[in-house]
Length: 322
Image 1: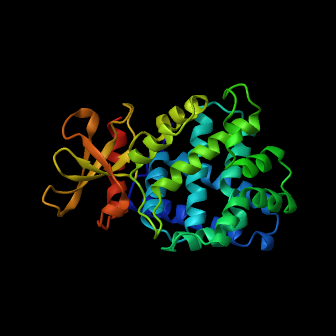
Image 2: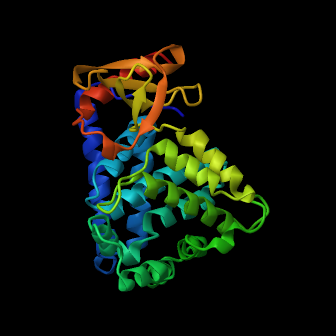
């Protein structure tokens, strides 16, 4: 992955602002699709914008997205869609999907819940279980979303099929490489959707740690979907950028960047063993020795207010070590 590391704090402010703008823009079109002119074209534009940001610095993108997704249930639907789209974008590369399949997959990830955006945001901020009416809306939303997209001018049949089937267990039948492309792509989105939902908090439950989410997704994977699960792990690792970790020195860290060694990322040490935040975070390459990561932590269990600019500023050091 050819990252173009950001050079200074101003560039990180620009990058953070750009991701926030992308997320809020996506939230607007998902929240009122009927009022969005040329909806399908707007989705294409947001996809291009996301690709440009990921090209600038994929690890910074993952860091910001995982921090945004795991720390706030506000605007959950747009945040979740964007996390899924980024993961699908990375998965498409990892699995060498043709461009056309990659587009159908990412566009489906961005729009899979378009028929229940407001309710999804509501559910994230609701402490009680979904009502009977809400459960019914959840049950029918894939088909309703596909119909809505078709009515708004989406002509890509695979995009519509992936959205319509992203909760359908029947897509799990058959070998990954021999099933129809739309079935294969639906399977990818289904797994990414579950993984991203697990790491995100709701008022009714805390998000899980990234490692726990990954292990749960892998444990529930049929042998036929193993290839997708392993690709997901290669793409993000057990501790993706933006994940809080406890080091075996008892210090608190946040994963900053992946490294060439699987599951040995660069970590910003942000808190001492005594529980206090450090005045200045310290870069640590876990591939180069102790301390190592003892466990990933759910973001809900960490009360630290991080200075993302300061932490991401360490990225420059990390990339010069690669």
